[in-house]
Image (tube, rainbow, N blue to C red; front, side, top):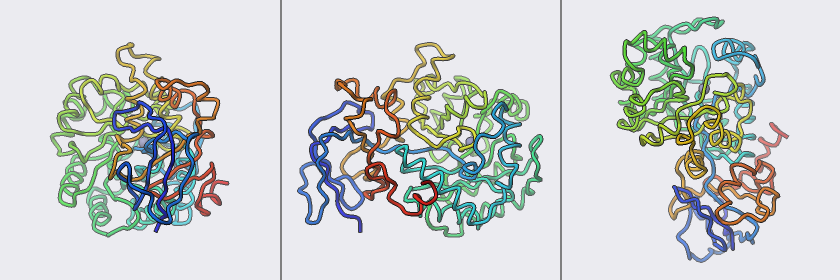
Length: 419
Ligand SMILES: [Zn+2]
């Protein structure tokens, strides 16, 4: 059992759309949840004087690929397709359990140091196997992060890629097996790589399996202009309509990137409740473009932020990804489409709030850091995104358990993986 934790006299950013700071607040974390305000500290609780702490909901990294933690910095001048061929050229597609664990722990160490406690790992191995997904899930559980692992699937070849994808039947067989295997340590979903890398039969088969097994589906969509043109040419209609028609939309479906989507496509996503995962740093790194985040927000699309894999970012730092989400639209989108700090914080925290009953996923920044010097209340949220760095993050707590304490990773495995 984790010991209850009481922060006394902290400054709190509640989240869930409310990013106005409240000073002098107590926050009790008990049984992995946020307690009702005013609940007395139970016997044995750890009580921390917190007048120098800024508490807010932890970040959720909504899109990464853990194998890339072992392949950073590759093809630094390439766009997506040429970069992909380099990124997985050193055996990252066929890792043994020890190497999978190493990659996941490296991702987790950096993610926690950047304030994330939840992660979605769009996990690529070719061919996909139940054992590799189980190894990734076990490593995420060991890290202390709460993970969702979407097994990457494809059955069409990619230009320049040094592999032969499995056949459709084989891909669907392993997709069914991974959902029925009872894998522990993470929520398991299906991750068709992208429409241009999957046949119709695979896309439709994934949709049917996900419905029967109540699994989430996570895929790349229209990351580059070429992806968007290829998908439109193949389906003869807009990519979101094409996925809708194949059952790949709705609240349990997530599209990563969405850089090259128009207003009609965004409206369709809003209507179906499909999540858009914005990966600003990877889009910049690979020259893919600036996603229409402001237009998506204005139309009511659900939005989250991902770091993307550690080879197209090249970090797992959500604070950095959030800052880019705030600033990148200013390089090429009209002023009216710039998301504001509150919107970006909402996306980076996955809509979480420090509300009674919510999971006790809490991060604590040091208000004595230069980033917050003489900050007025209205400046706290903007300073968090614009000025604060991971070194200003003192504590990270996931489901009530310490993951980072006084800037030190708590898990010996993480400290060993990423000293
Ligand atoms: Zn990706």
